Image 1 (cartoon, rainbow, N blue to C red):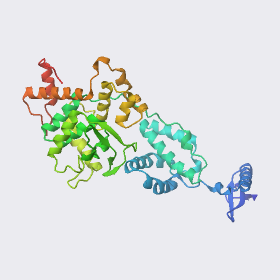
Image 2: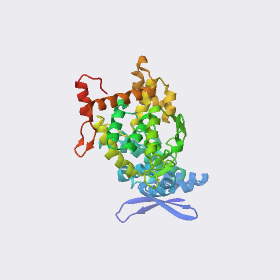
Image 3: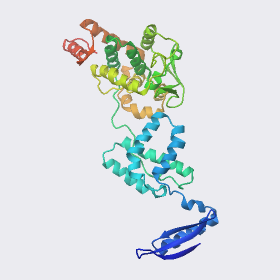
Image 4: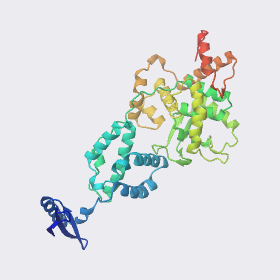
Length: 401
């Protein structure tokens, strides 16, 4: 191990440290003798400690190591939906800023500056957080493989993922308006699916994975979900049961009588009984659900947000945070964070069984329609008369939905 002074062709001086590693001669150049001496001392210490191999670790660029991370970890262990999020964050945010840097050059300060650059460019907090999580996941494998000693991504605080706007649960009357639009257009399957989402609190993937055998006397068993056309575990990897209220039991019975196959999926994705694929779900959400929601006066609603409707029903029934969380399939702390404003607004005198609130809403909506003697249709001109129907009923001085 030694330091040699060398004159370069450009006339500048550099200092070269020569050492042996794995039985081979190695060298590294430095601009100053001070830096060369510091590296030589570091090399001697590493040789005595038996960790000389770490001196050359972390030379791979983030882009090069990312390919290994993707092939050996992401592809083998993560769900397709998660891989899609990682791929978007990696290609859009990580590679353009970090791709050409060596792993050992990535520091907490560098990541902090990168976060600031994303935020100044207008990236949303959730987007920034996802990008930072993606880089951190890659660097964690680099730690495991001994390329770097610590994960700098862990040292940098990420944007808050707390909900910025309070959820506005869809009321039972609004749910029934959405169902009304679908039923009047002969979309019985879709109306039943809306009932399941709104009156069980299931995530869409869980509802689409339901089999007729999951429907029991008083409950529905939730033990799996559909993702990208395949069956998988639920989001929390736990099995739960949700209560089966009378209105939903009626809707499922009606749909079962209309179904060709009563032994497989309640909502099959094909005539062969396969589960829904991603494109099929997106098309349904856009062409069927969204049109009905707009007609009902709730353009902000998605199939997933119907989950809030069920939570609101349970809260107004008087269920505790723990009971609501158990039905929804997530942590009580998340329930409290999401629905604290609903709980705070609860009037003790308003408490009614969830099933009774749904029955009252259904009766009221049907009464308005029957008294109007009109058909509700969604044609090429768009949702044409649901909102007008209820507005006109209100102007007439009647009790409205």
